[in-house]
Length: 162
Image 1: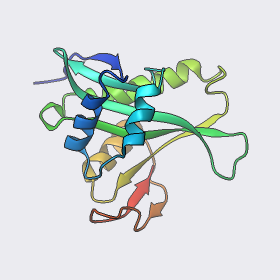
Image 2: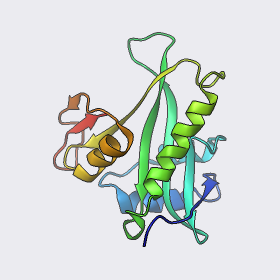
Image 3: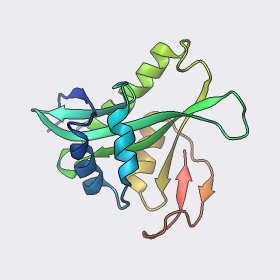
Image 4: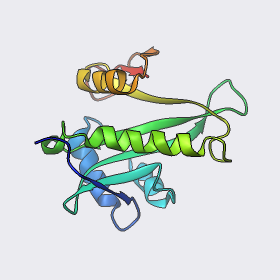
């Protein structure tokens, strides 16, 4: 099966439990309740959204605009999570989710939300070769700083920034 045709949908209080289930299935770490409360309150479905296939949530991306440390007045888009259920991987869903956020940024970068954005960044656990290849080869993200002993309950406990 090739690329699947997906639709996007907003994350809100009525469906945030679906996000929790996707994240639990996709990631070796657990996100606290405040993460999900924050995602349910976001009003911009262009930065945080579900990917639906045949009416079922099969993936999601959650991003935020945050200040860049040591760069007053400058910001970045931080990709907090990108998860696609295992049975739906390698069908272009993750690529479409990331592309949708990047396209939104490009179309709005001169507007008030993104006029201070200088970079897009994310973190990948060092053992997640698939994710490193995905971001590097499909999108041209470059490996950055290695942060050691960040994670408390998974091995290896390190991540690479991109």
